[in-house]
Length: 127
Image 1 (cartoon, helix red, strand yellow):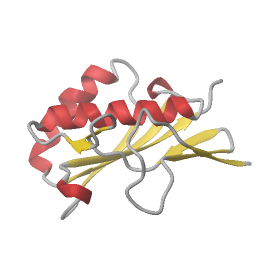
Image 2 (cartoon, rainbow, N blue to C red):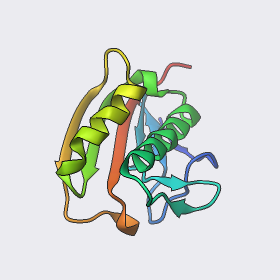
Image 3 (cartoon, rainbow, N blue to C red):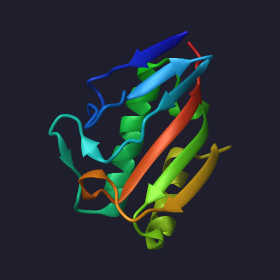
């Protein structure tokens, strides 16, 4: 069974995709940007703030699908500049204090809306 995830606690899709899909005991999120869902604007002042907002948006989508950040098994991170890797790791250390998920990080030429970071997740359904 495949269920589309929709939540107002994370930004809506800016293209033809769903915020997330629940299938086979997993939640698969689309890549999330550092957009404040209340304001609809990308956080541009600071990389760490943008990354924290991305994780907040991921949390909202995961929870709407019956998972959580604590039950994420895989993250894929897209950065426009790998020099932000240390700052990313610092933000992840705040969020994933023990037994962090598997993760890949790649540098890309550009991201939607001029974002510095985009992250997608796969979490286990726990409800």
